Image (tube, rainbow, N blue to C red; front, side, top):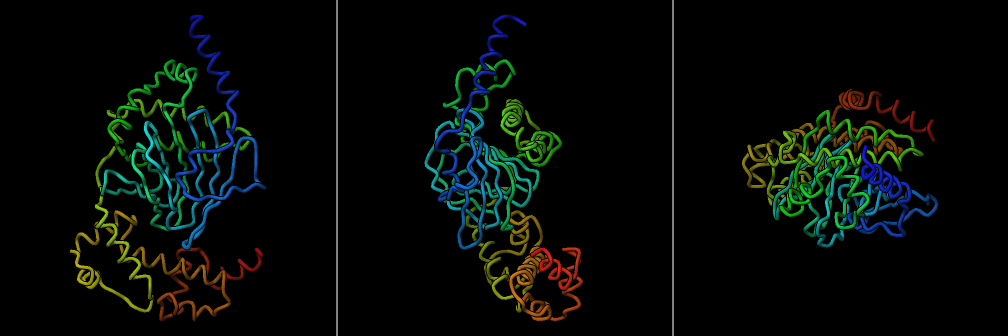
Length: 343
């Protein structure tokens, strides 16, 4: 190793070890209005809460290095509002661990990341919200402000063969949104970030982000990169209207033909776009949604099981009990008893 290489590594270690948490995380603007949890204040992490009429969420925010922030997302809501301004040379990376996440591409196109998927995009345009079609989403967001990365870290990247200029041109200058479907390479990088011990996180996140940037340095050649399966915003809006219509009254049952005719969409487009947004068929989604609603009623009310079955569209309580057990592993009565014991 040359003396210059040793000096580069020495400088890099200094900057990595001395990185401190700033007073304000600019990256939280991605989430709109958030409330900091002062009771959970730590030197290396800040906890934020957000809520709206659809539910609530929590964010654990880490300043990894100057210009690089990492957020652990725990969302139990349909969307979160955003106040994101135009940002030059800023990259937003999202990894979906559980649920689904809506990604914007261009002015009118949307695509969807499922469990295990990874998206990388330029934060070049103003977004009004982030959508979670299944009403829950767990994953990691990494925000990289390229212009704020210090020279010492850039030198370390060069030593590791990370081509930051290539990533900048491929993503920021072209304003791309790249979606990478679940693969062993992505799983290897992110799985350890979810399981590492808390006291190891600060150092571990630095290493894993370097590994991730090295992975992105070959973006234009990566076989995992996809820019397909995009849906027009008008299509998606109509699909969400259909979903709201179906779930507004569980006593009514609709065929795909009836829904297509009512909302003036072809049956083929309805089925394909619905699966694209929600990751499953209309009937499978509705069945799960009914049972999730039943689970909530069992936890939050004292209504008889038979009445809950009727409320979520099951005329036969036995069929409801069998369906509930198939999804949750216990009958409604057993589930309710378990909830009471936990309390």
